[in-house]
Image (cartoon, rainbow, N blue to C red; front, side, top):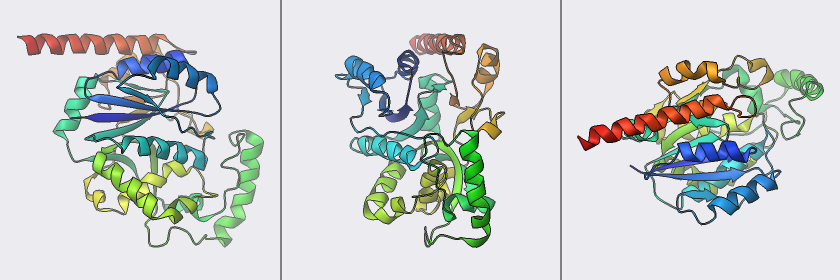
Length: 297
């Protein structure tokens, strides 16, 4: 079982180092896209991992604006790097995610469930406006500020009644979680489809949070639909959903995270709480030592 992990990183070299350490496994390669706006982080990672055979800091960098098409473009840049090699599974995480199971556990889990596509979502339903109306502020770097959100909502209200863009013809529309763990074959299918159908990417201009639809629509309109498990394998607490951002975990969440059946969790910020990351790393090191002892008996 060979696995690739694609990571969208935008800040905090120390935290990315902890993440890379936690993802270390002989069967795992890590691909990292660094936001074009953070040259310092890119230089630090390149200096440390430029010659690594397991960690790939990709050269193509996108200036990522949360909620914009630039998020999809950054993910596609990672996918096009990964597809050049051969893997069994590919996961997408961010630099503020962290594994909550040991990598040995994750590899074994995927081996036991080989062939499943882990991508969370459903029919787009009343959220059709994300793709069928014009969303003018998705790529605005201030799109999370209240003034922009209010203006965005004012522009959207009449559109929901009057406008249906002629996009995504003959495709069922879906939305869900950005994060996924899918087979290499499924990933390759998506890369090939996008190359052969450039209109699909163009249709996402003026869409809202396209990363929450782009890959779901491709998978759910393909032969891979029958293999989809509606689960992104990511522990996320959306208590702050109104703000459009998940809660940052702290050391008090340790027991909850370790009892979760998920493989990864989001999100962490060592500038707010470093101890939770250190505890997770310590627990995974202990689990690996125990597994080694068992294998040595």
